[in-house]
Image (spheres, rainbow, N blue to C red):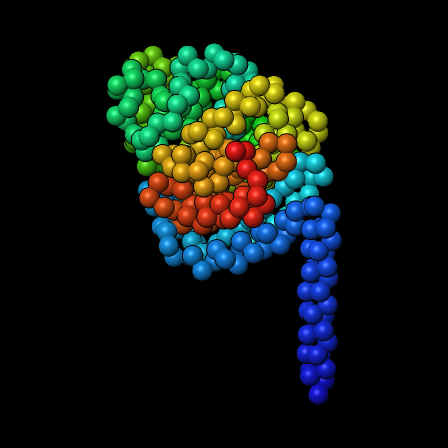
Length: 338
Ligand code: GLU
């Protein structure tokens, strides 16, 4: 009898809860505001049946151990600095290539346009770790988000900072407003042990004079930046600096000029998703960056940033559910940069 009463109470509470959420949604709708909680909640429910449709990255053994059935979604808003979260939003994962955005921001904030003498700004149309294009283009990588380009960026960063790994982690902690960000040493070691292709890229570019530092040290720094462990909540917060046109909204500090922030966005929109960048622009319409750890983070200038993590990848190395979730999000809010 008692449990029936409790069951009845629970049922009443649930109904009341659902009623309040419905009323809240209606109020937001009437005020012309977006109900991000509802949108990401709906997306989350629609996405979990897709678990099993991709494959976790296994060319870095430590990544192959990740449980594929995880999904986190976070939206952070620029104006009122609200954070909307669902699922595995606070679990740190290996951000991999997303780190290329952070190192690029660090380097261009110091060197400005100089970097573009050594790295191009065009989509590559080739896999992220391809060697072929480099030979045709005399050791100048197509863009800063393929591995070759990111290696040049990290090389320049090493010339700017005597302690590059510390500089990277300090920078990311500052734009994220969290001292909890760390290098996952197990991932860094695993990647270092399987870095033959990246070593080849770096030595090849060095032969053209486009790498200035010791290649072994460069690969060590690069493997560490890729092994940064961050959650969707951390990533969405750290990308607010790009959404806020170069100013860290957490402390008002300008990290990039407005023009540099615009250019970072243009690079992310055209080159941020390996050779699936065109399709991401077509389906989603936001500048952003993905990594083979299954994370995707993107933003709408002046409005919001969003991160999704789901480790199963498609054949391009992008999170299958991540892309699908982003497509549903921009469709749901009926907004994109286009
Ligand atoms: N650390 C990875 C590599 O260099 C990055 C891959 C990625 O996320 O695109 O192979």
